Length: 534
Image 1 (cartoon, one colour):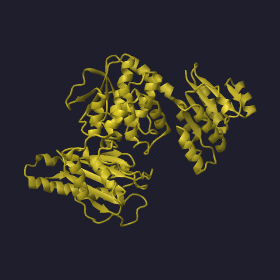
Image 2 (cartoon, rainbow, N blue to C red):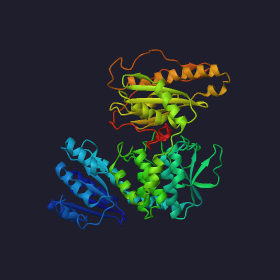
Image 3 (tube, one colour):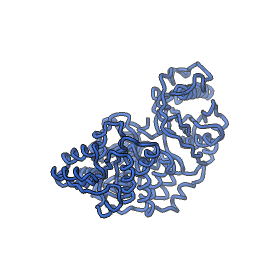
């Protein structure tokens, strides 16, 4: 049974209520509270439970049961703002969808953003947007997930993306806990490596049970498959693209069709760990200290300690986890020993940087540890006058790239896709992104001088492509960042590395002026495997 509560019922609210009443199952509950006495009588005549009261008054909902979803639906912005604040205070953990009304100010939008999980703007197709937001509540999703797990006949493999970051590791661990709570045997699995010191410390100190699969490992022992923190098989997870997926839980926007019998994509939250925290809570499971600590760390890393792409749901999840987490272990995870190779990589990035205006690009040459790249990118960002960084290096037959930005006119995920999607895979967030490019000829060259020549050409192509993508984003003056008009297309030996850049664009989404972290500070996220690894 799902209980929906509606506070305020204007023109939009009335349409939504009628449609919800039509859609509801027999066991569902719906209650409308509005100060429009005539409307209350009309709704009651239509067999829709309604109460005449002030939707903004705390006493009105003081004795109302916590709903599974609450919709604030007056036509007036001021009424909705007050009702929203009252509702959030009374129901801190409830999912709230709020209609802005027709006269919202900047202050109103800020207030709504701080209290509502989802906001519906007057400029959108209002009724359909609200219905979409309220169609599946957290309670319904948990029920659907339980039904699917109950239907499984055999062992479940829960896959992270390759080289998993803390959010992916924690999410996989939590989903295994959920599956085992209903009698389904499950493993948290990944391809690649966990090489970054904070991530290794997290796994070791919490004694998390993860299964590392070889690229050619058989999957025959598994009857079902789940993906967490990414959404497409075969895209940065070592799985066959044609794999039948049963469960997908992610917070990144998909860049293609998402398969799965159960799919929960929450683009509005800052971490997949937030979604899994909700499911653990909805299943009524006690929070294991190890899982709670991992989930809290996953949320903190993915939101950069609640300063990047954070939503109210992330704060609520952290509040839920805090009493169960081991804060002493968290401190140990966040302060591991920084290895010498990492410090050398950072030093090479600083020494080799090429800076154009506020953008710095650096090659660190051959890599022994690819996880040093994001830390080097962070350190460049901490330097005076630098707002956007790209650091890259080469390992085996691949070039790995890591980017950071605090500029308000740069979306790194889009910028790296513009620059490198044609020659590799790229993606990530507005202020944190990465890419992987294949430079296969490197593995075929025995002569060191020839190999270094190939690296030098690849370095120039990568540097030029990134500056070009930055230069051609909307709003950039002609000539900015521009020092060369030549492109190099092919490295010696015939391996294609780049081609002329097409139209590049970047969407300005947010400003992050927080200082860059120090090495080993625990603020690392494996962005090169984020956002479907693209």
